[in-house]
Image (cartoon, rainbow, N blue to C red; front, side, top):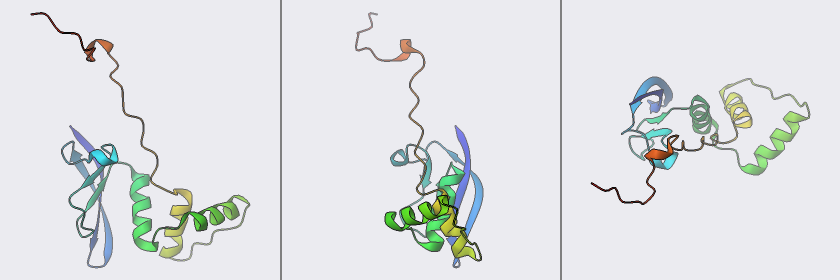
Length: 126
């Protein structure tokens, strides 16, 4: 099965995003089958199915990850109406982390909709 997504990689000091496809063998069980890892090395591309998770990852590469306290203060100010100026790439990366604080929670794993296909532990007579 093939899934559309995005590869994020660092190339000559720049971050590049490429639209791509993944098959189920490329997706990682530790990300609930939502991300593809070619290696743990940051020089290798990292794949994402979810565009918001991909944007959050890019923002961390640009600005570093905001710590929880800094994010909470910035979010409170933003909700109160304090403007969040965006004048450069660093500011944009901070805004992305403000709006998408962490990788979004993964949807729950789908349960088998047909109960006759689940293992009830009973032996099947042949």
